[in-house]
Structure formats: C-alpha cells, structure tokens
Amino acid sequence: NVAAQPPAPIARVLAGLRDEMRKAGEHLKAGGQRKLAMETLDASLRLAEFGTRAYGLTASQRRPFDAALESVKAARHEVQMGRPGDAAAILSRGADGESADLSGAEASLPRSLLSKADGLKLLNAAGKKLGEIEDFRGEGEGLFAEVAHSGFVGLGEKTTLVPVGALLGAENFVVLPDDISPEAFKDMDVFAR
Image (cartoon, rainbow, N blue to C red; front, side, top):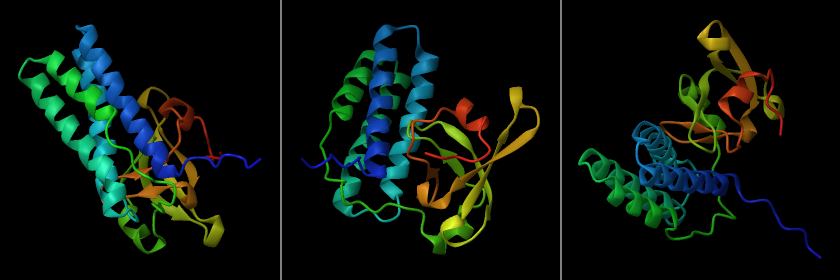
C-alpha cells in the first residue's frame, strides 16, 4: 500500500478559494447576509488574484485561478446590480469549475524575491489576512519571515515567525497555505505545522 501524498500547497489554496466561493454563495442565498457575503467574496478575490500571479505555476496550473477570478468578479457585479441570486449561481458554478493537476506545482516564495516581499500581506488558505511581512531572519533552512500583526483588540504589535519554505509567493500577496485562523496565528511566536 502506498500512502496518499498530501495535496500540493497551491492545491490547498485552490481548495480554500473554492470553499470561500461556496460560502459566499450560501450567504447570498440566505439573504440578509450581504456584508458577510461581501467579506467572503473579498477573500475569494484575494486568493484568485494570488493564484493568477503565483510564482512557479505554469499557464495550465493558473487556469482554474483565472476562471475563479472571472467568476468572483462577475458575482460581485451581480451583487452590486442587486441580483444576489444570480451572483450565488455564478459562484456555485465557479466553485465547481475545471480541475487542474497541481500535484507537481512548485509555487513558492523564491529567495531571489525576498526583498520584494517586505510589506506584503500574508494570507491564510481562506484568504484571510494574517499580517504583513516586515523582515526576514536567519539564513538557509533556518530563514524565517517576520510577520507583524496587531495584538489583542488591535492594541500593540506582535510578530510571528514563519519558515520561508512554508510560504507561497506572488507579486501582490504571500500565502501560508494552511487553515490557521488569524486569531490562532496571533497567539503564535513561531508557526509550525
């Protein structure tokens, strides 16, 4: 028996994107949850934009992110036009969109681009902001991103160290392809899987 390999980190991001699209659609169908739906749509938009620009992906590996981005943009337009039911239908179809073989995808944060990552937002696999990259510490396998975020109730600033090898990069965001909540992340001094 061969043990199943865990999904590639970028595949976890795509799964998180599709989950957020489904949640936004459910919020829209439920009615009266427009604010929550828009927050979830915003998270979907960030993840889709990330995937369309992620370093190390081929054009075919970007295709599901491109399709999701178009679906999210179309759904946002439908919401703005007062048609939440149409938006929910678009999101449902988009979340069930084409599949891609991401098993060999090598999306990462290239070390040559670390200087450009300073100040970028760090997102989790659900598109929620965990903080901003301030600096890098260490070297080689011991290289960590220093991620700044607000402390309790927005007071005080705290940092969490994240191994650079755990991060995926794009020109506009850095993603930690993990399901960690912003609240749990803020309680950590060092992120460890």
